[in-house]
Amino acid sequence: MSKKQRIDQMLVERGLAESRARAQALVMAGLVFSGDTKIVKPGQQLAQDVPLEVRGRDHPWVSRGGIKLAHAIEHFGLDPSGAVAMDIGSSTGGFTDVLLQGGAAHVFAVDSGTNQLAWKLRQDERVTVLEQTSARILTPDMIDRPSNWVVCDASFIGLAKVLERPLELAAPKCQLVALIKPQFEVGREEVGKKGVVSDPALHARVCDEVRDWLESGGWNVEGIVESPITGPQGNVEFLVSATRT
Image (tube, rainbow, N blue to C red):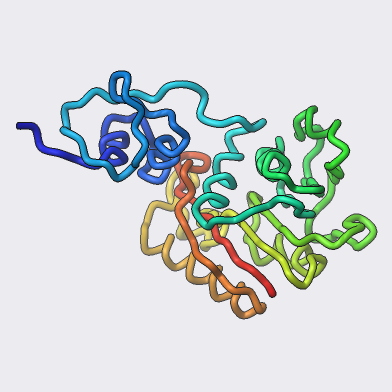
């Protein structure tokens, strides 16, 4: 009799998912099958020789970035319905799309680049497009209503720097979901080849530092979870959920 193994482990070992977190997300999205049987529990154990496949598109958002925020919302049991949010580092708009599909009332899409936000989001009256705008110089005139959600997927800058101004402008009671990217938090000498930080000890240190920074600013950190998809060059990234009340 073949030995049994967890579904999420098998998906990674067979190259069908890049991490266990990603494998779990695929299962929860209803995209993993063994023959005609849909797998519904990531931790389910089956014989190691069972057939497994991933079917269909794995997300309904304008970019794969949405997978990250959707995972955090599900993992931490969050509800963006009715929210007014700032999306820091909006890029194509994956996070913005997740928020709107989750019932958010309005999103300020902030990005230092230009012409990146998906057309369907540009046309949405619930979105204020703030392109060519550094999050570090946001003003109350730009964010013209209290934002009770802040989400962030920014690159080339640490969270403490990029979020300082948005968190000042956010409503007193606020939900934060931000992507922690170790490659932009550690010292240059700690970044490996091709910009990859692979040392789990560095990952843990960075997550602890972000937690300490938020808590020192009056935030309650609800948790930190590994992102279901990796960043550029395979960098492992993390999602932090925190509230200010």
